Length: 444
Image (cartoon, rainbow, N blue to C red; front, top):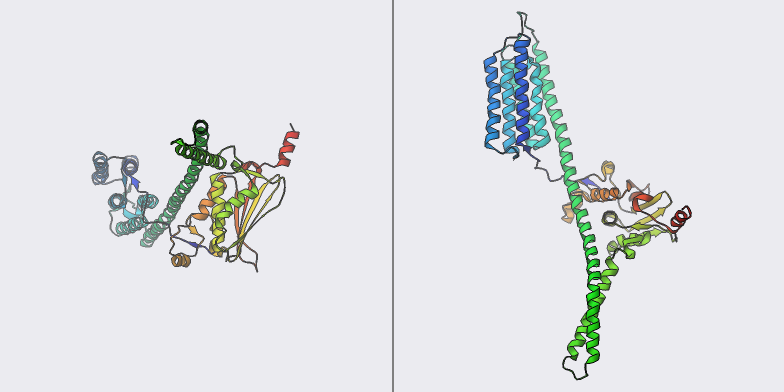
């Protein structure tokens, strides 16, 4: 099973709610006003208070206009949120120009708009904001009014030190922006993959629900159909051989019998009381394997013949997860797939192994994560497929929901192939054996 990363459908972002942006700007406005008041009145530093308050007041005005003109629940895309965050960068630049430029410790606030963009907007918008922030920081490092300071001895910072501040700020913008964007992107990928998993599980549950409805319909229709059959039979007995309606009544009886056979089949397949609701382990594995037997790959299922073999409550997640792993093994096997099962009072272990190329070393540690495909990129292109690398993730998620613990590894050389081990505690699968049931009754 050679594996490769497949790029998920990027180029999309969750966007940024206008209400969130407005609240963050109000927080920034409040902090800026507080800083100006404390520095000017509390510390006694002379400030160009009127220009500074005008710059802060412009942000407050923009906030008011946004709240009045647009619904606060509106979600902004890159085209709208990007310029608004760029405005915040420029507004901060104006304040820093008036209050000392790079000498002002509040120069670190350049990180805020980049951080917000990296968590909600696309990578391209985040890069543009980062470049703008770094450029503006360099600009106020070259041209800015003196740093406000009380007394006549103004602090003098060497140009090399100011250049170091600009470099460190640039590195921080790049590193923090990239890290935050990557974390947010992984969250988006995981959300997409979980949504796909929920759709698959919902589909399987829907099919199970249809089975239940079929069983209920068969049960409810059984009584009126029996009455119809009885009435038709009595009509046949009362008719003579030459009766013109004899053929029609015979046809009606045949169709009634056919309906009864169909209902019996539905009941046997779907009834909650049917043996298929809980299955012996060997039968369950055979049900999983059967759809994959006609692809030229030998599938060997090894389950020991034991009267105490587990009886497992089947569910859609278990069947789909196992089926997905078997399908993947058949896809990459050279000649055979081996499936073995062992159990004890501690739980159940199932191993799926193939003789294919195995997991590639560079991604073997990430098997089961979303958007890591078990097909090599060149094979995808050759087959004309466009898998998103969600198969293993969905299977792993569904099986873990049933209580399983999964591990992935390759066969030991000189053998080749992938080995997937699954373990369920007894209580996770509601495993039952005759021996266990006997011991349980004896303990009462």
